[in-house]
Image (tube, rainbow, N blue to C red):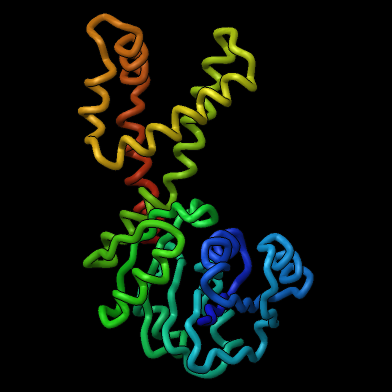
Length: 252
């Protein structure tokens, strides 16, 4: 069984490790042994644990999961030359990663938190020689999409990477709306979850405009609600959200 070495033990590292734990051995290097123990407990499998200081990455397949601002600080703690580094850092260019990390190859990846349930939408770009391996490795946590440029990956970060937060806002707001009209909170949450579960399947095969037209009867309830969303500039706000998140990714 191959070993994947995580540098960093935050939420994204844990989500990815949960998706990989049944097919790979997991090794994690972090700053605090107590946090590493907590990581292991939450992951539910035995892992190799180490502190970052003088950690040897020689010949290893590394999943780099630190904060973008900490690249230089963490890089100087590591020794050896990695076989390949898979970075999940938003906005951090391949050139910068190669400048600070000693590795034969670098691939940028942008999973999302659905990695923990094997349903991440993960975008990839970087050294073409590792395209197939990257798709196989990150394919263990969901769907992958190899992109032709880092600009496209930064845009995808704003969409698929940050997207779960946008959908959380929408799902919570829809449930709140049902509660406001008199539905019990537990029932509203159950209905909302059922909505997202079924819609997630439908959107894989059918264009959203076609789905929308299929449920919107002339003068009906959906048309009334849809009109309210348009009046609230929900469409424009979603477009603006992608723009703002993309620009932020390029600034990191």
